[in-house]
Image 1 (tube, each protein chain N blue to C red):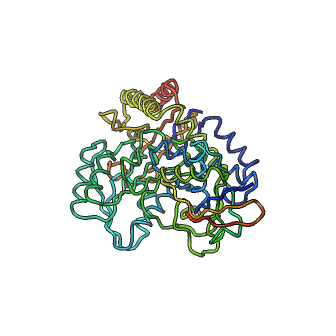
Image 2 (cartoon, rainbow over the protein chains, first blue to last red; image 1 turned 180 degrees about the horizontal axis):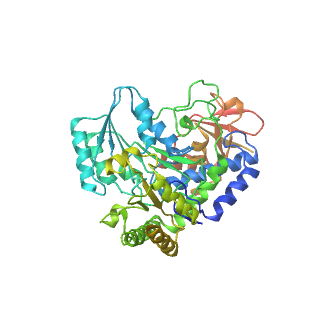
Image 3 (cartoon, rainbow over the protein chains, first blue to last red; image 1 turned 90 degrees about the vertical axis):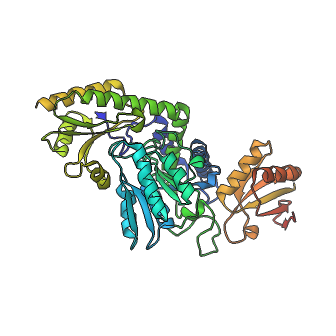
Length: 374
Length: 84
């Protein structure tokens, strides 16, 4: 099978990831819950993971690195910490349901969509500026569209938010590990990311990088200040109630180590070259509509496609039968499809990781061609 | 043998404290605080030798890590808080 669904979950991981998770199941207990060797070993792994994440994402203090179960968990913490009934919130036109559903769950939130054309980065900046000028309480922006790979200019949007003194939540689900990220330079209140995509960790892991006061989503044991019945005021304990997913965290640490060794810039360049190869090749196939940015720097490792007259889900099935794993439909991001004009049909999405090869893309293009003739 | 326990607000804070000291060449060991000094319940401490305290305090001040409390003990179960 050729796996092209890394925007959902990276399947091919560095071998050390699975080894570390397996070792954790056998040897590690729970950080902070006991002073015995298995608890100490778990604590050391958790701290190493926080420290390395802080280094990779330029977070001043490892205590600001909070373990979550996925990006959705982190986004819920961030959104419910900053957005309250009646808040005015600006979001990009490319947000995932992980952002829009929590917002809809809070009563009377005025959600303003800073809508902009696909791959037009400056239009995205202008749209955010317009809404910030109107007055908003919180801004939320995805770094990379999970449907189209469109890289939103978060550095400029973050700068605008700082100048308007509006806290910013960044969804970096598709960019963490794939594009350079500097939390300190961005100055966002929160950055939420999954562990199981570009960080090559196991499913059930995620990180929330916190620079603002946060409210717990869960209350419970933290291994600290146990007599108090309120959650601790300090991070990461405030947001980490209950037993950690230490097997996941051990795997995530190995994923982060891989990224550090390989280098984010090298990963970004490889994924970009795969997507250009796929996009340019696919553009020569009759009847195929592709969503490829003119400017290669405006697109990450995701490409959406549509075949004229073919249902995208059926096309995904046909490709699956031929040994290619892709995702079709709305990708939990109806807003992105609405913005790009693909809400009625959905798209077929190909997404790559550092482990895909140019040969695999060639094979994919060959099969796409045969399907177009069929 | 006399040693000091630097009580920290959380496990992660204790790990940061120990890491900063280790980086500066001071042997530091993270452990759960003894019940009698834990304060509001469970907490974690960093154990250092008696002779390391002045250097440790200087390093922690430099890197912006504030000890919650410090105790001295001879390992006989008695702890005496150290006024800083």
